[in-house]
Each structure stands twice: as C-alpha cells, then as structure tokens.
Image 1 (cartoon, rainbow, N blue to C red):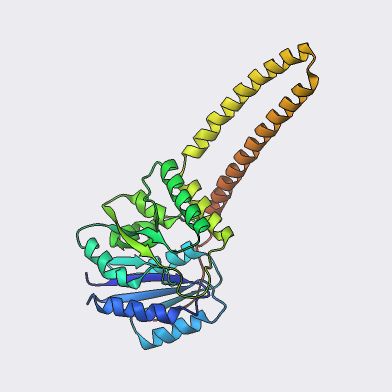
Image 2: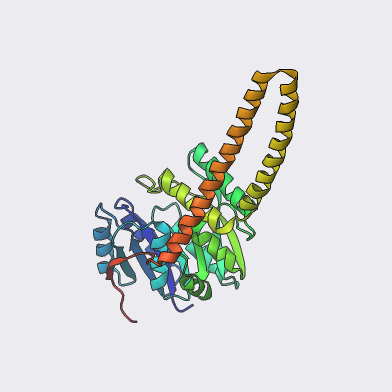
Length: 309
C-alpha cells in the first residue's frame, strides 16, 4: 500500500481534536505506511477549525477541509472521500469512541484481500436506553433490507480504492454510507471491538439527527415496510368490511352504543394507518425532491494542505 487516507469529520470538537491527533499519529507511525489525514470541519463554531489548522501546520500529513456550514456527518464524510487519494481509506470519528489504536488491526485484515473491513461494536459504554435503541434499529433495518446489512456497525471501517471510487460516483444526496458500502458487495468482513465513551464533551448527534439518519437508512434500503403497509391496508379493508357487516347485525338487535364505539375504533385505527402511510410517502417524496434539485452535497469554504506529492 503506497498511501493510506484517514477521513475524519468533526463538528464543535475543540476538546478532543488535539488528543485524537496525538493518538492517531502514534497509531499511524506504528504502521510504517505513508498516510494522509483529512480532517473535515462540518461548520464548527467553537474554534475547532483553528485547532485543526494548527495541527496541519505542524504535520504535513494532515489536510483540512472547512465546509461553509453544518451539512451533516454523511456529507462531511463525502467531502473527505472525494479528496482522499489513498489506495485504502479509513473513516472514523474524532470523539475517540473509534479507537485509533485499532487501525493496525483493520489494515492487517484488509491486507488479507478484503475490500471493506468494518468494526463491529461488541460493547457500547452508553446509557441503557441509547444502547437498546441502537441495537433495535440495526436489527430492524437488517431484517427489512433486501441487502445484507451488518448489525452493530457504524462508519468506522477501511475501504479499498474501488469502493471509494464507487461511492464518489453515486449521485444520490441523502446518503447512508454504511449501507451503501454493503450494497456494493465485494469481499467484506467485520472485526469486533469495544466502543469507548466519548473522551470529552457531548455527542453532536441530537435525537433529531439520529432519527434523520435512521430514516435515510430505512428509505434507502428497506422496501419491505412499504410492502407490509400495502398488504396491511388490504387486511384492514377486509377486516373493516367484516366489522361493518357485524355492526349491521348488532344494529338489528338494538345495541346502538356498542356499534358506535366499534365504528369509531375502526375509524381511528384506519386513520392511524393512513397517517403512517402519508408520512412514509412524504419522506420518499422529500428524497426524490432532493435528488431532482441536484444541489451539491456540501460547499467548501477553505482547504488547507492539499498539494501534489
């Protein structure tokens, strides 16, 4: 391997960038592989960019991309992948939940001939509710998707040049990169690790951002929910028709109050299903609208350290 690229997005992470760089540099030095580190500032407002800039001035392996505003983690990763020139690219977070010390293990497995080696989270040092939600989401998405998606994995991985070129060639705007890399196929394998707590600060992934990422994953890779909703709709119509016939029979016996209650219950259930269907349709239409507009994934404000070798 002539060149290894590390792509790391960050947003308001001034408390951890320097520590991350120190641990990353130590891990990269142990590999004896020529490397570049691409730090992507996703519109930070806390001085994180200035710290990244100072690191770049000390180490010519480091390159910095500054986006004009906060476009989101998946767009920031995309910006880094578009600039990465390595034969292999590692994507990882800056908060040290993805330990840099695991890089040699990723490289060793990658050298066995795999195109993607992803890190599998055996343990998460987070709250029980958050752990449960993550666990449930990954398993639900894996079951619903026609593409085999590994569970308990994030963006932390190493990918070959051909996978990166394929990712960079995709035109879609609403990206779920960990799903896209599985969709490509080729030889892929996971290696387990224990996910640490954040070194400092709080997660920048708010509940809204997590739900948005989850929806991107479901809409992009899960077709089964729409099929289920279709047949569920038919089943509800059939059940409601039977219920209406029963209601007519009850009406003939004079039990009018019970009939009204049952009718209202069926209407409420049917209305709830309609709202769910409309929400999913609206989400799909929103994604289609984004694709039709052909807006860029991100806008670069500044680039530091990008020079020809």
